Image (cartoon, rainbow, N blue to C red; front, side):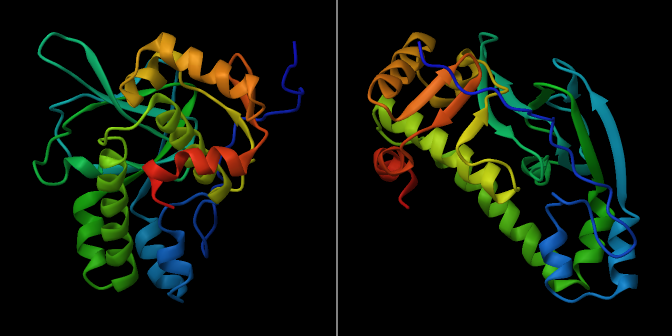
Length: 249
């Protein structure tokens, strides 16, 4: 049976930046550096940052109903967000990679509306939201970035709401994951899936056995190669064509 070629796969982690720049995967770096803010402006935002962690696999970062006073950017690892329904069954809301923000959906109610748990070893940059909101009033680039992040968060929530086939949902998941990794300087074709098949199925609103069947079918057709949690995209064009109905681009 074909297998994904072995390669070193260090756990990606951002550097700590310095007095002129933020961490390499920082969700706010574009808002600051590209806008030409001076050193003092950068420092105003940098002092709001608290590096926290590590959180180990299965450890919760926050729970539904906890008081909200900060958003956090993932520096390393993967965070899963989910809610429990009335029967106590888990509903996966999303998976958050290095450079992505958790906690944005808590702003309106001032309490976290979901649980967030580490899927592997997770490091975070924690931003005081009240102080950040105040700073954003005099840094238009930062304010615009906050709005952009909020918009992306809403878009992700609506991504799989349509009546799509299992193949389309899986293809969209892989393409979106590939693009997100590529944006952060990681491989766009060799993906380490930190989430389980059950978590993926839950997120895509499919049965776990359906996810396994779809992955096998994609592998048999030469679109991907899978070994446990290692997945290689072999035919990106065909995967993107399959995902087009969901992703729209």
